[in-house]
Image 1 (cartoon, one colour):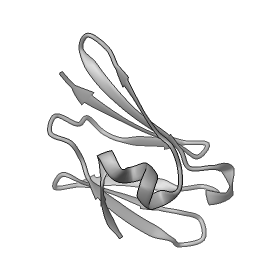
Image 2: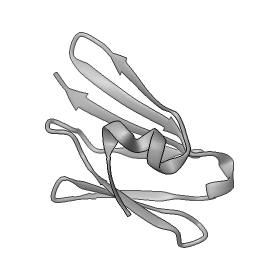
Image 3: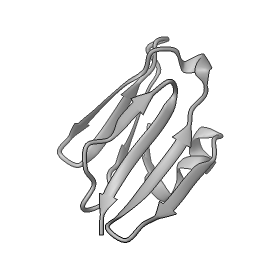
Length: 81
């Protein structure tokens, strides 16, 4: 499933938080512990998340996005300002 990062919370049923700092904007979403050991990869401007249950979803990364990460079910995307 491909989604827009700004509509992430609507599509995935989770809350996307945006935190603005002087040099970067962070997008943070708690996907929940039930996703297990999820992995994330960025390919040609698209982030691909694969859960332990082999569920997969992808979304376009915003321009200027640095490597997205996921740890303990929390997805973080940093975008340079």
